[in-house]
Image (tube, rainbow, N blue to C red; front, side):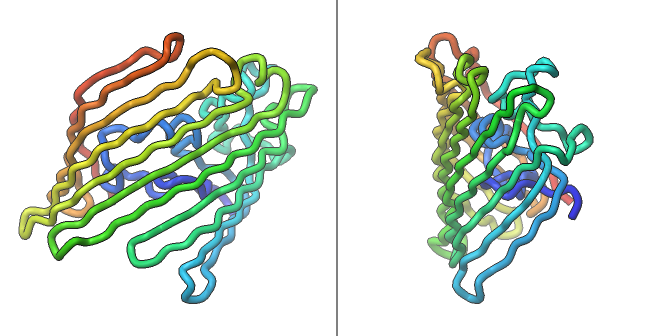
Length: 254
């Protein structure tokens, strides 16, 4: 009971800078899921013996996209209430199942929002489907290969969301990487990420955003990271502005 992270995606559970590649979090998990996402409610989970299978279930507060509050149904990231503004009148439910074994983790989440416009007269249901793979395999004591891949999709009911194209939101990414352990010097990792997302996929207007990111992480210690990456945007006309740039960052966890 209490405030908990929603069991969805790869980096919502572990979103500290040393745990992911890139200066910025990927936009699929930022805009579609949307990380970082926590709610108030009751959460349970467990493992099925030694099979590698695991599960999570949570009943929790929901999003608010009420038109009466000046919001847009289907504006998922803008609908987070950070618990402090949420009520218990329109709960949401999340279930996750997965399998983890020997550096391979496969997982899928389903979420149902009973009403994301709680302050409007018309009820608006919404559903999220998400699936991902998070794989790390050692080549030897010093080198390991990694692969992350994720797909997420929202379906939002109601004519208001449909009119804005936000009755469907979807995105996916793939991220291969290689990490080198440096004896007495920490570790260094190289990665490439391709991601694509569309927050108004329900209309006929081209609005797909895509991005390629090339970068490097350096961990002088396990809980500290230095990052650099170059990202290249390729967005459809009418979508958000392209933002090609070079980023530097530093992060830590404790």
